[in-house]
Image (cartoon, rainbow over all chains, first blue to last red; front, side, top):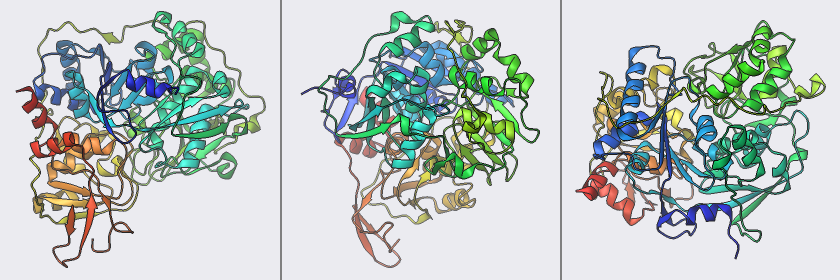
Length: 583
Length: 40
Protein backbone atom coordinates (compact mmCIF):
# COMPACT_ATOMS: atom_id res chain seq x y z
CA UNK A 1 0.00 0.00 0.00
CA UNK A 2 1.39 3.38 -0.98
CA UNK A 3 2.31 5.91 1.65
CA UNK A 4 1.36 9.55 1.91
CA UNK A 5 4.16 12.08 2.21
CA UNK A 6 3.02 12.74 5.77
CA UNK A 7 3.38 9.09 6.68
CA UNK A 8 6.82 8.98 5.08
CA UNK A 9 7.91 11.99 7.12
CA UNK A 10 6.54 10.52 10.33
CA UNK A 11 7.86 7.00 9.82
CA UNK A 12 11.32 8.26 8.95
CA UNK A 13 11.49 10.10 12.29
CA UNK A 14 9.54 7.67 14.48
CA UNK A 15 11.36 6.80 17.71
CA UNK A 16 8.42 5.76 19.90
CA UNK A 17 4.97 4.32 19.35
CA UNK A 18 3.22 3.17 16.21
CA UNK A 19 1.95 5.40 13.46
CA UNK A 20 -1.69 4.52 14.01
CA UNK A 21 -4.18 7.39 14.13
CA UNK A 22 -4.85 8.42 17.71
CA UNK A 23 -1.90 6.51 19.19
CA UNK A 24 0.84 8.52 20.86
CA UNK A 25 4.01 8.71 18.81
CA UNK A 26 7.41 10.22 19.47
CA UNK A 27 9.39 11.81 16.65
CA UNK A 28 13.01 12.86 16.48
CA UNK A 29 13.43 16.56 15.86
CA UNK A 30 15.84 17.81 13.20
CA UNK A 31 15.29 21.54 13.64
CA UNK A 32 13.92 23.84 16.34
CA UNK A 33 12.78 27.43 16.11
CA UNK A 34 12.05 29.66 19.08
CA UNK A 35 10.43 33.08 19.24
CA UNK A 36 10.95 35.90 21.69
CA UNK A 37 7.45 35.42 23.11
CA UNK A 38 7.31 31.70 23.87
CA UNK A 39 10.94 30.86 23.23
CA UNK A 40 12.22 32.87 26.16
CA UNK A 41 10.37 30.61 28.56
CA UNK A 42 11.47 27.54 26.59
CA UNK A 43 15.11 28.54 27.03
CA UNK A 44 14.54 29.11 30.76
CA UNK A 45 13.01 25.64 30.94
CA UNK A 46 15.90 24.20 28.95
CA UNK A 47 18.28 25.68 31.48
CA UNK A 48 16.18 24.35 34.36
CA UNK A 49 16.44 20.89 32.84
CA UNK A 50 20.22 21.13 32.95
CA UNK A 51 21.07 20.20 29.38
CA UNK A 52 24.62 21.19 28.43
CA UNK A 53 23.92 22.03 24.77
CA UNK A 54 21.15 22.10 22.20
CA UNK A 55 21.19 18.82 20.32
CA UNK A 56 19.14 19.22 17.09
CA UNK A 57 21.12 19.94 13.97
CA UNK A 58 19.62 23.37 13.49
CA UNK A 59 18.27 25.62 16.25
CA UNK A 60 17.33 29.25 15.64
CA UNK A 61 16.13 31.85 18.18
CA UNK A 62 14.15 34.69 16.65
CA UNK A 63 13.40 38.08 18.15
CA UNK A 64 10.42 38.79 15.94
CA UNK A 65 7.28 39.50 17.95
CA UNK A 66 8.27 42.20 20.40
CA UNK A 67 10.99 43.90 18.40
CA UNK A 68 10.41 47.55 19.19
CA UNK A 69 12.21 47.39 22.54
CA UNK A 70 9.85 49.99 24.00
CA UNK A 71 11.44 49.51 27.40
CA UNK A 72 14.38 47.70 28.94
CA UNK A 73 12.38 44.56 29.67
CA UNK A 74 12.21 43.78 25.96
CA UNK A 75 15.86 44.53 25.54
CA UNK A 76 16.70 42.36 28.56
CA UNK A 77 14.86 39.44 26.98
CA UNK A 78 16.58 39.93 23.64
CA UNK A 79 19.96 40.06 25.35
CA UNK A 80 19.09 36.87 27.24
CA UNK A 81 17.97 35.14 24.03
CA UNK A 82 21.14 36.13 22.23
CA UNK A 83 23.29 34.97 25.13
CA UNK A 84 21.64 31.56 25.59
CA UNK A 85 21.71 31.02 21.84
CA UNK A 86 25.41 31.75 21.75
CA UNK A 87 26.16 29.54 24.73
CA UNK A 88 23.98 26.54 23.87
CA UNK A 89 24.39 26.36 20.11
CA UNK A 90 21.56 28.26 18.42
CA UNK A 91 21.67 30.82 15.65
CA UNK A 92 20.24 34.13 16.90
CA UNK A 93 18.07 36.12 14.53
CA UNK A 94 18.22 39.76 15.55
CA UNK A 95 15.16 41.99 16.00
CA UNK A 96 14.23 43.27 12.56
CA UNK A 97 15.76 40.31 10.73
CA UNK A 98 12.30 38.97 10.12
CA UNK A 99 9.38 36.88 11.18
CA UNK A 100 10.50 33.44 12.30
CA UNK A 101 8.46 31.35 9.88
CA UNK A 102 9.25 33.40 6.79
CA UNK A 103 12.92 33.59 7.69
CA UNK A 104 13.14 29.93 8.57
CA UNK A 105 11.56 28.96 5.27
CA UNK A 106 13.99 31.18 3.39
CA UNK A 107 17.16 30.28 5.23
CA UNK A 108 16.82 26.89 6.93
CA UNK A 109 13.90 24.83 5.59
CA UNK A 110 15.02 21.46 4.22
CA UNK A 111 12.48 19.14 2.60
CA UNK A 112 12.06 15.86 4.43
CA UNK A 113 13.14 17.14 7.84
CA UNK A 114 11.14 17.75 11.01
CA UNK A 115 10.80 21.15 12.64
CA UNK A 116 9.42 21.93 16.09
CA UNK A 117 8.67 25.52 16.99
CA UNK A 118 7.38 27.51 19.95
CA UNK A 119 4.81 29.18 17.75
CA UNK A 120 1.53 27.83 16.44
CA UNK A 121 2.28 28.98 12.89
CA UNK A 122 5.39 26.81 12.65
CA UNK A 123 3.54 24.65 10.07
CA UNK A 124 4.40 27.28 7.44
CA UNK A 125 7.56 25.32 6.63
CA UNK A 126 5.30 22.44 5.62
CA UNK A 127 5.17 24.37 2.35
CA UNK A 128 8.67 23.02 1.69
CA UNK A 129 7.89 19.38 2.39
CA UNK A 130 8.85 19.52 6.06
CA UNK A 131 6.87 18.14 8.96
CA UNK A 132 6.68 21.38 10.92
CA UNK A 133 4.73 21.52 14.17
CA UNK A 134 4.03 24.22 16.74
CA UNK A 135 4.28 23.12 20.35
CA UNK A 136 4.42 24.36 23.89
CA UNK A 137 7.65 25.80 25.18
CA UNK A 138 8.40 22.91 27.47
CA UNK A 139 7.95 20.36 24.69
CA UNK A 140 10.43 22.43 22.72
CA UNK A 141 12.81 22.65 25.68
CA UNK A 142 12.87 18.86 25.86
CA UNK A 143 13.46 18.65 22.11
CA UNK A 144 16.34 21.12 22.47
CA UNK A 145 17.90 18.60 24.83
CA UNK A 146 17.58 15.87 22.23
CA UNK A 147 14.30 14.38 23.41
CA UNK A 148 11.55 13.32 21.02
CA UNK A 149 8.36 15.26 20.48
CA UNK A 150 5.33 13.27 21.58
CA UNK A 151 1.86 13.79 20.16
CA UNK A 152 -1.13 11.71 19.05
CA UNK A 153 -0.71 10.33 15.52
CA UNK A 154 -3.04 12.53 13.50
CA UNK A 155 -5.41 11.39 10.80
CA UNK A 156 -4.12 12.42 7.38
CA UNK A 157 -6.50 14.21 5.03
CA UNK A 158 -5.60 14.72 1.41
CA UNK A 159 -6.65 18.12 0.10
CA UNK A 160 -6.97 17.60 -3.62
CA UNK A 161 -6.58 20.83 -5.55
CA UNK A 162 -7.80 21.26 -9.10
CA UNK A 163 -8.01 24.26 -11.41
CA UNK A 164 -6.13 27.50 -10.91
CA UNK A 165 -6.77 30.70 -9.02
CA UNK A 166 -8.59 33.35 -11.01
CA UNK A 167 -7.46 36.99 -11.13
CA UNK A 168 -7.68 38.76 -7.76
CA UNK A 169 -8.10 35.44 -5.97
CA UNK A 170 -5.21 34.41 -3.76
CA UNK A 171 -3.87 31.66 -1.55
CA UNK A 172 -5.43 33.46 1.40
CA UNK A 173 -8.81 32.79 -0.15
CA UNK A 174 -7.95 29.09 -0.33
CA UNK A 175 -7.41 28.83 3.40
CA UNK A 176 -10.34 31.13 4.19
CA UNK A 177 -12.54 28.86 2.09
CA UNK A 178 -11.36 25.85 4.09
CA UNK A 179 -12.09 27.76 7.30
CA UNK A 180 -15.54 28.63 5.98
CA UNK A 181 -16.23 24.98 5.27
CA UNK A 182 -14.62 23.38 8.28
CA UNK A 183 -14.49 26.04 11.05
CA UNK A 184 -11.68 26.49 13.54
CA UNK A 185 -12.47 23.04 14.93
CA UNK A 186 -12.34 21.28 11.60
CA UNK A 187 -8.71 20.29 11.64
CA UNK A 188 -8.25 19.09 15.20
CA UNK A 189 -6.25 15.90 15.30
CA UNK A 190 -5.48 16.03 11.60
CA UNK A 191 -2.74 16.81 9.13
CA UNK A 192 -3.73 18.21 5.76
CA UNK A 193 -1.56 17.02 2.89
CA UNK A 194 -2.03 19.00 -0.30
CA UNK A 195 -1.93 17.42 -3.72
CA UNK A 196 -3.54 17.44 -7.12
CA UNK A 197 -3.03 19.22 -10.43
CA UNK A 198 -3.87 22.60 -8.87
CA UNK A 199 -0.62 22.49 -6.95
CA UNK A 200 1.45 23.34 -9.99
CA UNK A 201 -0.01 26.83 -10.16
CA UNK A 202 0.75 27.69 -6.56
CA UNK A 203 4.01 29.49 -5.85
CA UNK A 204 6.00 28.62 -2.75
CA UNK A 205 4.81 31.84 -1.13
CA UNK A 206 1.20 30.88 -1.76
CA UNK A 207 1.76 27.42 -0.30
CA UNK A 208 3.32 29.12 2.73
CA UNK A 209 0.16 31.16 3.32
CA UNK A 210 -1.99 28.04 3.17
CA UNK A 211 0.27 25.93 5.38
CA UNK A 212 0.69 28.77 7.84
CA UNK A 213 -2.98 29.42 8.39
CA UNK A 214 -3.83 25.75 8.70
CA UNK A 215 -3.16 26.55 12.34
CA UNK A 216 -6.48 28.37 12.38
CA UNK A 217 -8.21 25.13 11.39
CA UNK A 218 -6.68 23.50 14.46
CA UNK A 219 -4.52 21.24 12.32
CA UNK A 220 -1.45 19.55 13.74
CA UNK A 221 0.26 20.75 10.59
CA UNK A 222 -0.01 20.99 6.80
CA UNK A 223 2.28 19.35 4.28
CA UNK A 224 3.03 20.19 0.67
CA UNK A 225 5.25 18.10 -1.59
CA UNK A 226 8.72 19.35 -2.40
CA UNK A 227 8.74 19.76 -6.17
CA UNK A 228 10.10 22.03 -8.88
CA UNK A 229 8.26 24.99 -7.33
CA UNK A 230 10.13 24.35 -4.10
CA UNK A 231 13.41 23.99 -5.96
CA UNK A 232 12.84 27.26 -7.78
CA UNK A 233 12.11 29.02 -4.49
CA UNK A 234 15.26 27.72 -2.81
CA UNK A 235 17.38 28.42 -5.87
CA UNK A 236 16.30 32.08 -5.90
CA UNK A 237 17.57 32.22 -2.34
CA UNK A 238 20.89 30.67 -3.28
CA UNK A 239 19.99 27.42 -1.55
CA UNK A 240 19.41 25.12 -4.47
CA UNK A 241 21.71 22.52 -2.93
CA UNK A 242 19.30 22.12 0.01
CA UNK A 243 16.46 21.02 -2.26
CA UNK A 244 15.43 17.40 -2.42
CA UNK A 245 12.21 15.88 -3.70
CA UNK A 246 9.50 14.79 -1.30
CA UNK A 247 6.25 13.34 -2.54
CA UNK A 248 3.61 10.75 -1.72
CA UNK A 249 3.47 7.43 -3.51
CA UNK A 250 1.14 7.43 -6.47
CA UNK A 251 -1.12 4.90 -4.77
CA UNK A 252 -0.92 6.56 -1.36
CA UNK A 253 -3.93 6.13 0.88
CA UNK A 254 -5.42 8.72 3.22
CA UNK A 255 -7.89 8.79 6.09
CA UNK A 256 -10.03 11.36 4.34
CA UNK A 257 -10.12 13.63 1.30
CA UNK A 258 -11.29 17.15 0.59
CA UNK A 259 -11.62 18.43 -2.96
CA UNK A 260 -11.16 22.07 -3.79
CA UNK A 261 -11.47 23.63 -7.24
CA UNK A 262 -9.26 26.70 -7.16
CA UNK A 263 -11.07 28.09 -10.20
CA UNK A 264 -14.28 28.33 -8.23
CA UNK A 265 -12.95 30.56 -5.46
CA UNK A 266 -13.66 34.26 -5.05
CA UNK A 267 -12.16 36.91 -2.74
CA UNK A 268 -13.22 36.25 0.86
CA UNK A 269 -13.19 38.11 4.16
CA UNK A 270 -13.40 36.80 7.73
CA UNK A 271 -15.65 38.88 9.95
CA UNK A 272 -14.41 40.06 13.36
CA UNK A 273 -14.23 37.52 16.17
CA UNK A 274 -13.00 34.35 14.52
CA UNK A 275 -11.12 33.39 11.35
CA UNK A 276 -13.91 31.05 10.34
CA UNK A 277 -16.63 33.71 10.07
CA UNK A 278 -15.96 33.89 6.35
CA UNK A 279 -18.11 35.66 3.78
CA UNK A 280 -17.61 36.77 0.16
CA UNK A 281 -16.05 40.20 -0.01
CA UNK A 282 -19.21 41.55 -1.66
CA UNK A 283 -21.12 41.08 1.61
CA UNK A 284 -18.94 43.55 3.50
CA UNK A 285 -17.91 45.81 0.64
CA UNK A 286 -18.42 49.47 1.58
CA UNK A 287 -17.60 48.97 5.27
CA UNK A 288 -15.44 51.92 6.37
CA UNK A 289 -12.06 50.97 7.82
CA UNK A 290 -9.55 53.15 9.64
CA UNK A 291 -6.63 50.78 9.54
CA UNK A 292 -5.37 48.40 6.84
CA UNK A 293 -2.36 46.16 7.34
CA UNK A 294 -0.54 43.56 5.24
CA UNK A 295 2.02 41.20 6.67
CA UNK A 296 2.33 38.88 9.67
CA UNK A 297 3.70 35.40 9.12
CA UNK A 298 0.79 34.73 6.75
CA UNK A 299 1.02 37.51 4.19
CA UNK A 300 4.51 38.98 4.47
CA UNK A 301 5.97 37.32 1.38
CA UNK A 302 7.58 38.99 -1.58
CA UNK A 303 4.51 38.03 -3.60
CA UNK A 304 2.26 39.85 -1.11
CA UNK A 305 4.46 42.95 -1.00
CA UNK A 306 4.82 43.07 -4.78
CA UNK A 307 1.07 42.61 -5.34
CA UNK A 308 0.30 45.48 -2.99
CA UNK A 309 2.88 47.69 -4.68
CA UNK A 310 1.41 47.03 -8.12
CA UNK A 311 -2.04 48.02 -6.85
CA UNK A 312 -1.09 51.26 -5.08
CA UNK A 313 1.61 52.44 -7.48
CA UNK A 314 0.75 55.90 -8.75
CA UNK A 315 -2.28 56.13 -6.47
CA UNK A 316 -2.81 57.47 -2.97
CA UNK A 317 -3.87 55.78 0.24
CA UNK A 318 -7.22 57.11 1.46
CA UNK A 319 -6.82 59.99 3.94
CA UNK A 320 -8.78 58.22 6.67
CA UNK A 321 -6.74 55.04 6.49
CA UNK A 322 -3.51 54.07 8.23
CA UNK A 323 -1.93 51.58 5.82
CA UNK A 324 1.00 49.60 7.16
CA UNK A 325 3.03 46.85 5.51
CA UNK A 326 5.19 44.36 7.36
CA UNK A 327 7.62 42.59 5.02
CA UNK A 328 8.13 39.08 6.34
CA UNK A 329 11.89 39.20 6.40
CA UNK A 330 14.90 41.43 6.07
CA UNK A 331 15.69 39.65 2.82
CA UNK A 332 12.30 40.65 1.43
CA UNK A 333 12.66 44.21 2.68
CA UNK A 334 16.15 44.48 1.21
CA UNK A 335 14.93 43.02 -2.08
CA UNK A 336 12.04 45.51 -2.08
CA UNK A 337 14.58 48.29 -1.72
CA UNK A 338 16.81 46.94 -4.49
CA UNK A 339 13.89 46.34 -6.86
CA UNK A 340 12.40 49.80 -6.29
CA UNK A 341 9.20 48.83 -4.51
CA UNK A 342 9.78 50.95 -1.44
CA UNK A 343 9.75 54.26 -3.27
CA UNK A 344 6.40 53.53 -4.88
CA UNK A 345 4.86 52.38 -1.61
CA UNK A 346 6.07 55.42 0.26
CA UNK A 347 4.90 57.74 -2.50
CA UNK A 348 1.44 56.23 -2.25
CA UNK A 349 1.30 56.93 1.47
CA UNK A 350 1.96 53.46 2.84
CA UNK A 351 4.00 52.95 5.98
CA UNK A 352 6.59 50.19 5.73
CA UNK A 353 7.48 48.72 9.10
CA UNK A 354 10.56 46.79 10.03
CA UNK A 355 9.97 43.05 9.79
CA UNK A 356 7.89 41.96 12.75
CA UNK A 357 4.71 40.05 13.44
CA UNK A 358 4.03 41.85 16.71
CA UNK A 359 1.05 43.89 15.60
CA UNK A 360 -0.91 40.70 14.90
CA UNK A 361 -0.82 40.17 18.66
CA UNK A 362 -1.32 43.77 19.69
CA UNK A 363 2.32 44.81 19.81
CA UNK A 364 2.29 48.08 17.94
CA UNK A 365 -0.26 49.59 15.56
CA UNK A 366 -3.13 48.94 17.97
CA UNK A 367 -6.34 50.22 16.34
CA UNK A 368 -8.30 53.08 17.84
CA UNK A 369 -11.04 52.10 20.23
CA UNK A 370 -14.02 50.87 18.26
CA UNK A 371 -12.26 51.28 14.93
CA UNK A 372 -12.54 48.72 12.15
CA UNK A 373 -9.25 47.22 11.06
CA UNK A 374 -8.78 45.21 7.87
CA UNK A 375 -5.79 42.91 7.94
CA UNK A 376 -4.02 40.47 5.68
CA UNK A 377 -3.09 38.61 8.86
CA UNK A 378 -4.20 35.30 10.37
CA UNK A 379 -6.15 35.90 13.57
CA UNK A 380 -8.93 38.20 14.71
CA UNK A 381 -10.00 36.89 18.10
CA UNK A 382 -11.63 39.65 20.16
CA UNK A 383 -9.07 41.86 21.85
CA UNK A 384 -6.07 40.29 20.13
CA UNK A 385 -5.25 43.52 18.31
CA UNK A 386 -4.58 45.14 21.67
CA UNK A 387 -7.89 46.89 22.33
CA UNK A 388 -10.91 45.23 23.89
CA UNK A 389 -13.59 46.49 21.53
CA UNK A 390 -11.69 45.83 18.32
CA UNK A 391 -13.28 44.82 15.03
CA UNK A 392 -10.66 43.04 12.93
CA UNK A 393 -11.51 41.69 9.48
CA UNK A 394 -9.15 39.23 7.77
CA UNK A 395 -8.53 39.24 4.04
CA UNK A 396 -5.94 38.78 1.32
CA UNK A 397 -3.23 41.29 0.58
CA UNK A 398 -4.98 42.41 -2.61
CA UNK A 399 -8.30 43.05 -0.87
CA UNK A 400 -6.33 45.00 1.74
CA UNK A 401 -4.52 47.10 -0.86
CA UNK A 402 -7.70 47.88 -2.78
CA UNK A 403 -9.43 48.89 0.45
CA UNK A 404 -6.53 51.06 1.57
CA UNK A 405 -7.10 53.17 -1.54
CA UNK A 406 -10.84 53.59 -1.07
CA UNK A 407 -11.18 53.72 2.72
CA UNK A 408 -13.85 51.02 2.64
CA UNK A 409 -13.67 47.26 2.23
CA UNK A 410 -13.41 46.87 -1.51
CA UNK A 411 -13.84 44.01 -3.92
CA UNK A 412 -10.54 44.18 -5.79
CA UNK A 413 -12.18 42.89 -8.96
CA UNK A 414 -13.67 46.38 -9.33
CA UNK A 415 -10.15 47.72 -9.99
CA UNK A 416 -9.87 46.08 -13.41
CA UNK A 417 -6.90 43.98 -14.41
CA UNK A 418 -5.19 42.16 -11.59
CA UNK A 419 -1.56 42.99 -10.77
CA UNK A 420 1.13 41.14 -12.69
CA UNK A 421 3.76 40.11 -10.18
CA UNK A 422 7.12 38.85 -11.27
CA UNK A 423 9.61 37.18 -9.00
CA UNK A 424 13.09 38.69 -8.86
CA UNK A 425 15.76 36.38 -10.28
CA UNK A 426 17.40 36.30 -6.88
CA UNK A 427 16.45 37.42 -3.42
CA UNK A 428 18.85 39.42 -1.29
CA UNK A 429 21.42 37.10 0.18
CA UNK A 430 22.34 39.15 3.23
CA UNK A 431 22.84 37.16 6.41
CA UNK A 432 23.76 40.18 8.53
CA UNK A 433 20.78 39.60 10.81
CA UNK A 434 22.03 36.20 12.01
CA UNK A 435 24.52 35.62 14.81
CA UNK A 436 26.23 32.23 14.84
CA UNK A 437 26.88 30.53 18.19
CA UNK A 438 30.36 29.85 19.57
CA UNK A 439 29.57 28.21 22.92
CA UNK A 440 30.98 31.15 24.84
CA UNK A 441 29.74 34.17 26.79
CA UNK A 442 27.94 35.02 30.00
CA UNK A 443 24.19 34.79 30.32
CA UNK A 444 22.79 37.99 31.78
CA UNK A 445 19.25 37.99 33.14
CA UNK A 446 17.41 41.26 33.55
CA UNK A 447 15.22 41.90 36.59
CA UNK A 448 12.11 40.91 34.65
CA UNK A 449 13.38 37.38 34.00
CA UNK A 450 12.14 35.10 36.77
CA UNK A 451 12.70 31.42 37.48
CA UNK A 452 10.30 28.89 35.98
CA UNK A 453 7.59 27.86 38.47
CA UNK A 454 7.28 24.16 39.11
CA UNK A 455 4.10 22.10 39.22
CA UNK A 456 3.09 19.70 41.90
CA UNK A 457 2.18 16.03 41.56
CA UNK A 458 -1.46 15.30 40.84
CA UNK A 459 -3.23 13.78 43.81
CA UNK A 460 -5.71 10.91 43.64
CA UNK A 461 -8.56 13.25 44.57
CA UNK A 462 -8.90 16.93 43.81
CA UNK A 463 -11.25 18.94 46.00
CA UNK A 464 -11.44 22.47 44.65
CA UNK A 465 -13.98 25.16 43.73
CA UNK A 466 -14.98 26.03 40.18
CA UNK A 467 -13.28 29.36 39.63
CA UNK A 468 -14.60 30.17 36.21
CA UNK A 469 -17.24 28.81 33.84
CA UNK A 470 -16.65 29.55 30.17
CA UNK A 471 -18.42 29.08 26.87
CA UNK A 472 -17.26 27.44 23.64
CA UNK A 473 -14.17 28.26 21.59
CA UNK A 474 -12.01 29.67 24.35
CA UNK A 475 -8.80 30.90 22.74
CA UNK A 476 -5.41 31.28 24.32
CA UNK A 477 -5.96 34.99 23.74
CA UNK A 478 -8.93 34.72 26.10
CA UNK A 479 -6.83 32.88 28.68
CA UNK A 480 -3.68 34.97 28.49
CA UNK A 481 -4.19 38.05 26.34
CA UNK A 482 -1.80 39.29 23.72
CA UNK A 483 -0.57 42.86 23.61
CA UNK A 484 2.62 44.66 24.43
CA UNK A 485 1.60 45.36 28.02
CA UNK A 486 1.19 41.63 28.64
CA UNK A 487 3.77 39.94 26.46
CA UNK A 488 6.57 41.96 27.99
CA UNK A 489 6.18 39.62 30.96
CA UNK A 490 6.68 36.45 28.91
CA UNK A 491 9.71 35.56 31.04
CA UNK A 492 8.01 36.50 34.30
CA UNK A 493 5.22 34.06 35.11
CA UNK A 494 4.05 35.67 38.38
CA UNK A 495 3.56 38.96 36.52
CA UNK A 496 1.95 37.57 33.35
CA UNK A 497 -0.42 35.44 35.44
CA UNK A 498 -2.05 38.65 36.65
CA UNK A 499 -3.45 39.12 33.14
CA UNK A 500 -5.22 35.75 32.96
CA UNK A 501 -8.76 36.06 31.58
CA UNK A 502 -8.38 39.84 31.75
CA UNK A 503 -11.07 40.44 29.14
CA UNK A 504 -13.32 37.58 30.27
CA UNK A 505 -13.32 38.12 34.02
CA UNK A 506 -10.94 40.78 35.37
CA UNK A 507 -11.44 39.50 38.93
CA UNK A 508 -10.24 36.01 38.09
CA UNK A 509 -6.61 36.32 39.23
CA UNK A 510 -7.55 37.71 42.64
CA UNK A 511 -10.30 35.13 43.10
CA UNK A 512 -8.04 32.27 42.10
CA UNK A 513 -5.26 33.34 44.44
CA UNK A 514 -7.73 33.77 47.30
CA UNK A 515 -9.10 30.29 46.73
CA UNK A 516 -5.65 28.77 46.64
CA UNK A 517 -6.68 26.14 44.15
CA UNK A 518 -9.53 25.68 41.73
CA UNK A 519 -11.01 24.31 38.52
CA UNK A 520 -11.97 25.94 35.23
CA UNK A 521 -14.96 24.65 33.29
CA UNK A 522 -14.82 25.22 29.56
CA UNK A 523 -17.21 24.42 26.76
CA UNK A 524 -16.29 23.03 23.37
CA UNK A 525 -12.70 23.68 22.26
CA UNK A 526 -10.64 25.10 25.08
CA UNK A 527 -7.31 26.68 24.18
CA UNK A 528 -7.51 27.28 20.44
CA UNK A 529 -5.16 29.68 18.74
CA UNK A 530 -1.65 30.69 19.67
CA UNK A 531 0.61 28.11 21.30
CA UNK A 532 1.08 30.50 24.18
CA UNK A 533 2.75 28.88 27.14
CA UNK A 534 1.38 31.54 29.48
CA UNK A 535 -2.12 30.22 28.79
CA UNK A 536 -1.16 27.08 30.68
CA UNK A 537 1.48 28.31 33.09
CA UNK A 538 -0.44 31.42 34.15
CA UNK A 539 -3.57 29.65 35.41
CA UNK A 540 -1.38 26.98 36.99
CA UNK A 541 0.56 29.62 38.89
CA UNK A 542 -2.73 31.10 40.13
CA UNK A 543 -3.81 27.74 41.50
CA UNK A 544 -5.83 26.18 38.70
CA UNK A 545 -5.50 22.45 39.10
CA UNK A 546 -7.81 21.15 36.36
CA UNK A 547 -9.68 22.21 33.26
CA UNK A 548 -12.90 20.40 32.42
CA UNK A 549 -13.97 20.84 28.82
CA UNK A 550 -15.63 18.78 26.15
CA UNK A 551 -12.74 19.18 23.78
CA UNK A 552 -9.39 20.89 23.72
CA UNK A 553 -7.48 22.42 20.87
CA UNK A 554 -4.84 20.26 19.26
CA UNK A 555 -1.91 21.89 20.98
CA UNK A 556 -3.53 22.62 24.31
CA UNK A 557 -3.23 19.23 25.99
CA UNK A 558 0.46 19.22 25.29
CA UNK A 559 0.77 22.71 26.64
CA UNK A 560 -1.16 21.83 29.76
CA UNK A 561 0.72 18.66 30.39
CA UNK A 562 3.93 20.30 29.50
CA UNK A 563 3.64 23.22 31.80
CA UNK A 564 2.54 21.56 34.94
CA UNK A 565 1.02 18.49 36.40
CA UNK A 566 -1.63 20.60 37.99
CA UNK A 567 -3.66 21.22 34.88
CA UNK A 568 -5.25 18.01 33.76
CA UNK A 569 -5.99 17.25 30.16
CA UNK A 570 -9.32 18.35 28.83
CA UNK A 571 -11.96 15.77 29.51
CA UNK A 572 -14.64 14.39 27.26
CA UNK A 573 -17.73 14.21 29.41
CA UNK A 574 -20.09 11.31 29.36
CA UNK A 575 -23.02 13.65 29.72
CA UNK A 576 -25.00 14.31 26.55
CA UNK A 577 -24.77 18.05 26.94
CA UNK A 578 -21.74 20.00 27.99
CA UNK A 579 -21.09 21.42 30.46
CA UNK A 580 -23.23 19.12 32.59
CA UNK A 581 -26.09 20.88 34.33
CA UNK A 582 -24.60 20.18 37.74
CA UNK A 583 -21.72 22.50 36.97
CA UNK B 1 -12.87 10.06 36.49
CA UNK B 2 -15.79 11.03 38.65
CA UNK B 3 -16.71 14.69 39.02
CA UNK B 4 -18.90 15.60 41.96
CA UNK B 5 -20.54 18.93 42.71
CA UNK B 6 -19.78 19.09 46.42
CA UNK B 7 -22.53 21.62 47.01
CA UNK B 8 -25.40 19.62 45.50
CA UNK B 9 -24.01 16.11 45.42
CA UNK B 10 -24.74 15.81 41.68
CA UNK B 11 -22.12 13.79 39.83
CA UNK B 12 -21.07 12.75 36.36
CA UNK B 13 -18.19 10.89 34.84
CA UNK B 14 -15.61 12.26 32.47
CA UNK B 15 -12.82 10.58 30.64
CA UNK B 16 -9.29 11.88 30.42
CA UNK B 17 -7.37 9.88 27.86
CA UNK B 18 -3.73 9.71 28.90
CA UNK B 19 -0.92 7.56 27.67
CA UNK B 20 1.22 5.86 30.31
CA UNK B 21 3.91 8.46 29.62
CA UNK B 22 1.51 11.33 30.18
CA UNK B 23 0.22 9.73 33.36
CA UNK B 24 3.76 9.46 34.64
CA UNK B 25 4.32 13.13 33.86
CA UNK B 26 1.26 14.18 35.82
CA UNK B 27 2.18 12.03 38.78
CA UNK B 28 5.74 13.35 38.71
CA UNK B 29 4.61 16.97 38.89
CA UNK B 30 5.04 18.01 35.28
CA UNK B 31 7.49 17.60 32.45
CA UNK B 32 10.27 19.45 34.23
CA UNK B 33 10.18 17.09 37.20
CA UNK B 34 9.63 14.06 34.99
CA UNK B 35 12.51 14.88 32.67
CA UNK B 36 14.84 15.74 35.50
CA UNK B 37 14.00 12.42 37.11
CA UNK B 38 14.70 10.62 33.84
CA UNK B 39 18.10 12.28 33.53
CA UNK B 40 19.10 11.60 37.14
